[in-house]
Length: 243
Image (cartoon, rainbow, N blue to C red):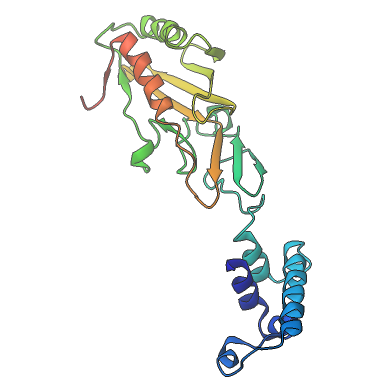
């Protein structure tokens, strides 16, 4: 019924005329008693909805009405994300993004985390729910390279399925199979060593976000990205800025 009402609103009086009913303003004064006429109205309504659903109606408002009941690639929410592809059906939408790694950032910084993604980052200062403070390694060592080697070992110890994709003297990119929601792709873990400040910056984000219609927030990762990072930090015995 929502779709019918929205379609009527966007197509106006011509739609009411087509399906054989009067506009709402006139409806109160008319009583329909002819059963055959009601059947014809129902048939015309079905035709009208089929026309809208197949995009034969070019009105933007009509398209919006159809989207109320069937999500599409255009309706998928990937706001704030980059390098995304979308897979959608009437019940759910999956957005997978691979364009947010540091190598795609001209400033060499780690990306933030969009509200439409699951994860945390030391760069997400404008999104408190996705922000986590940098780590301080001085509780373990004052040698940045010792700290860096310890981090690589801790990642592998925290999750045996972790794969080191790129490793330099101050940058690390690893992938881990996404834990929640089940059946998705990978989580990207990135770390930057800031030896001059004795800290390590990081970002852990799920490539895929799952949206169950009509929700516009992704299905939760149950804090699996944050919990993995905390497990790594616990193995290292490092502190956090602000502790």
